[in-house]
Length: 195
Image (cartoon, rainbow, N blue to C red; front, side, top):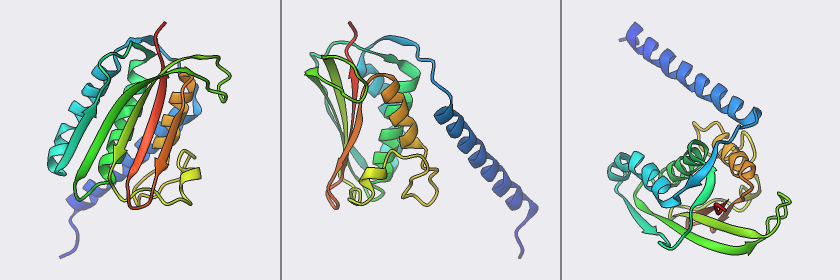
């Protein structure tokens, strides 16, 4: 039989949701974020994000390894915005491992790290690494990975990582990726320590 009105309606609702998400992401990218900077425990933030994604972990038979440095000081950041960044990176890692795998989340401190791009002086930065053992990213794609509208996913908008890049930059930090094809990818984010 031909598709029912209900099926068409479902499809329309899904498409409207998709367009709305795209518009929201475009707005996120175009308007300057007003950051509400507070002192945050990076591990609490990460645990909240991982809790949100617990169902995906179970459904996709993914393992999770946490290498947290318990001696880390508090970070200075916007809770909502950093949650958005970490959530996006965790979701991306899970999507990169559809047949199962392991996500390793590592936290570490780097002292006297100098970020030239932002023009900040010397300071202490906390790094968070999200390492998956998926298929990795093609070397040709690596330079474009944070560019708006660049995507390798059939249903991606190509805005997720561009928004992450922007939020991290507004925090005075860095986001970078390292990947070897066939060996997974590691996304690393730096955030400054609370004074």
